[in-house]
Image (tube, rainbow, N blue to C red; front, top):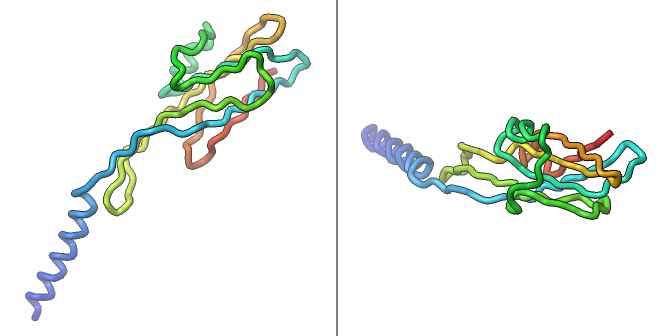
Amino acid sequence: MRKALILGIVVVVATILLIEFGSVKICDGSYDLSVKVKSNSSAPIAAVSCEAFGRLEQAESLLEYLPPPETRHWAASAEPFTGAPLIVSIPTSWRESGLGRTWGDFQFRGLLVIVQYRDGKRMGQAIEIPHRRDSRSVTVEFP
C-alpha cells in the first residue's frame, strides 16, 4: 500500500514536471501602442514621427540628430499632424510553459518622438515604453 502511494505521488509529480517543462509555447508578435503628442506652447505642430527601439539608450542616442524613422515596421508618422494619437507597433516575445508560467518576456522599451513645428523648428524626446501589461498608451508633451 505504501509503495503504491509513493509510486502514485511520483507519477503525479513526473506528469506535472513533464507538462511544465516538456512543452513550451514561444510567443512572438507585437501590440499597438497609442502615442498622444501635445504641445504646451502656442506654436502649432506640423508633423510628428515616432520610432520604437529595443532599448531606451538607442532612442536617446539619436536625440542629437533627430533622423526620420528607419523602418515602417516599428514607426508611425503624421504629416500634417492633426492631434490624433499615432499608433506604433511594438515587438514582443516571450515563452510560456504548459502550465502558463511566463519567462523570457521581452518587448521594445525605447521610443523616439520627433515633432516639427510649422516654423521648421524640430524637437525630440526619448521615452521609456511601459510594459504592455501596465499601459498601452503614452502621452508626450513638448514645451
